[in-house]
Image (cartoon, rainbow over the protein chains, first blue to last red):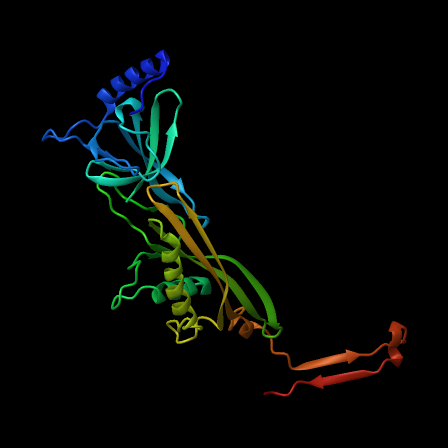
Length: 118
Length: 197
């Protein structure tokens, strides 16, 4: 499990925890956590909370035509995860399954996972 | 209102790529305009996928005079048929499968049918090039295959009937001047009378 290695990382982790408490997915009306993650490297899936975004973006697959899609991403405090996330990990967010395409670390204790819908 | 031949060409290709009896992968999502953005996923909260879809648009056209009188042009318009799809890792295979369908449907109707007046819409259709591209931004891998066709058609400009208002060409008077230096009194002359057809 990733552990904060410096006092600063510990502070960032705590700050991220506050942000997740406010902006995170939390639980649905039945008390079921909305986010589950399973690491491709192994291990059972487990519940976790983070901040989910799915911003609309313009994509141009070299046609000159504007295609509007979304760019789903999920941010976590590393300390909330059992392993460092990697490409290929699977998340279920609000009942939709996503695959991790690109984990982006900030080097200070949080990670943002760019996702593709499966 | 008269319809430009390019509009007829785009509409004809659109009709070839919509098959109500045997629905193609894109169903009726075939558009002849690229002026509005296409929504890949209408609602990120509930999922859904509007892909694949097809765009048909014209880029450039070259014109060549093939007959001076009456003036007739051979016009060659470049029509691009782009299929956009979004899927997992096999988007390239899916694009190839879509291209297979488009190429055969368009090339098997190389005059693109006839218009409302019973005239063929195109004299010839040729596949010129294909471009494939994928991007991984977005909710899924999004790819596109753009096939460029050259479509030939002939057109009289001025349009037929405009010449009807001109005086008929019946006779011609010709004066010959060798080197432009002959005295008018010494110049040979000819009178031509045009035979009626």
